[in-house]
Image 1 (cartoon, rainbow, N blue to C red):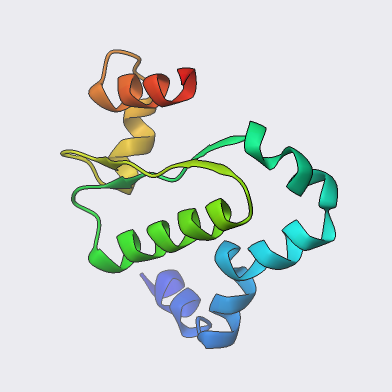
Image 2 (cartoon, helix red, strand yellow; image 1 turned 180 degrees about the horizontal axis):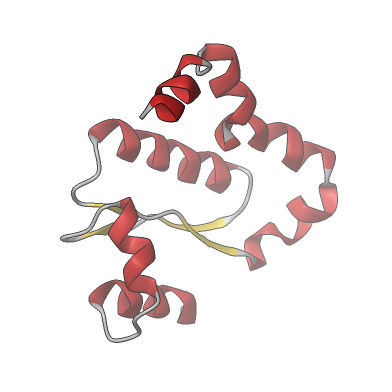
Length: 108
């Protein structure tokens, strides 16, 4: 518990911006034109769980929108009966609805 509290002590606006993939997206895409030229061929899934917090969903949709605006082929499903932990756990089991939905998106 002490380690966890110590970690949160260092989280502030500057460190959040520094570690945010959303804040780094524009710079990284503009730096690498080759990525931008091939981005339509890259399928990206930014999924959220039905039970995730509204803030986590908001950030996920914002990230998906930013990727899409930079030319990426995006799917951003909200997985029923899931949160961001169970999504990852269920991807390893091919018979789960989550894994089936991800496979369906990947095959498009």
